[in-house]
Length: 448
Image (cartoon, rainbow, N blue to C red; front, side, top):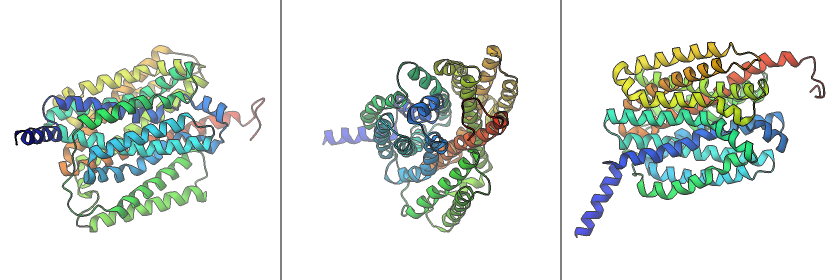
């Protein structure tokens, strides 16, 4: 009898995430998020090595880089809401397993098509992990002040992961072959699976009504079509091209149908009433814009540092390190800044700092101006992380606890959608500026 009572008490503590264990849970969740965020940018400095080894075509190379955020963004709502039904911890652990398997497949890929498939599977695993980390965090930290600190650490890891990807990739490329950027995931996932099973609390939503499978698939297909269309535009495809217009039109149509379906259902997959709250909808938009700037500018910076300044992959990663440190500092100071200034001022100040940083970086030319580069990256990292912190904290606090998975999925969809649009949009701008310079032909390179 006493043994049963003790076991029940232990189960309740683990489910609630009470006591000091909640900070251990935060560490586990942040390690999970770090791996997912790193994989979004780790290939940026490895693109030349992948191109030399696998010889992908131009479209295949775009797919290698973009398929991960594309698939991840498409499936976040599906897995976020599924976690509300079957258990967020369960979905997270399944994501760990899939992420590890896909990493091994990517590391051993011997052609572009296998690497694209592996990156797509990594996107599926990432879609299972990302919303689960944020919704479990919402469950474990019910107190808003503690939750603000936890979200500060969490959002710092999200930004740092994207920034540290080029550094990690550069270091590994200096010593190993390009497949090593994926192999590092495997031991971490092998540790995360048993640790997560032991320490992470299980949590679900209220479970009212059936899970809308059709709605989840409509959202996934709609997001896939929209992001694919944007990606093709970013790749320089003509606006009138059928393979560009068709995904955009079909994707937008499916998303409109998804919204109408959710409004009619008694138990919707995602409570769209959350978007009627200005704080929630504005926070989602700010996350998209912040990630658009962060990932797009990092991609351009990685190419600029290697192809214009002639730096090695490791040197490129080291040059991006100030951005990482600045983002970490902003995340750790976020809770204090939130109490003093509030989320609205934080987000506005973050965007202003980001704009000033971009203006500074436009002064870079063919010469290596280290002081200017460091100043720009510090302001960029601090500004974008301040924006992400204020937006995530406001979004998560506005969402009801039983809708934590759906709200987290919307936030993470915004995160990945912004990353994908950033690569496409700023990639298009870079191509438009670069292409006229090679119209006369390059010696030794075929005209096509």
